[in-house]
Image (cartoon, rainbow, N blue to C red; front, top):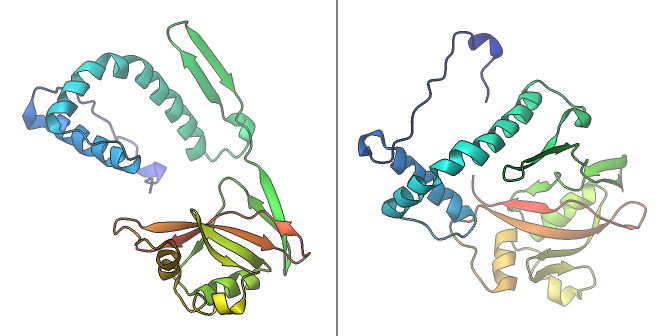
Length: 225
């Protein structure tokens, strides 16, 4: 959370010069920890401290040129967010090639919008940024929750597993309806959810109050807080 502007007068940032050969400053320790955490997010093999130190020593020229430029352009856009600008034309995408050199800017494209007909009228949705978040409830409660929103769920899938379909016979659904969503995923996929995984993504097909198929945002099951 950002501090209030009135608390910032007199605040001064002190730049720290990167030094990879001084172990007492913990620069390499921080870089190794931060880079390996990010690598874990994208299934990239982790690097030990020695390899991190070797890479960091060779990357300094890039940090001082392209990386510095990209970071500066990003911070300029961040200032606009902090300033509360809501006009999309105020923001810019940047395209840079220092070898040419080339600097180009364009207006960002607005994310696609949609809507569905709920019980209380039309509900606008952002197809890129919106999502439904649900707790680990039973399949019965999940369907009821969407019914309350004015949406009749016809199919639920997670990955390659089809968890629910309205055309399934009652004999196939009776064992699934009382299962909580995490157990439903594990039962149908026949694989346990990894301990480190904090959410599961569902793709849901629905009909709204008009009886038409509608495209809705994905659903995220929150497993752990």
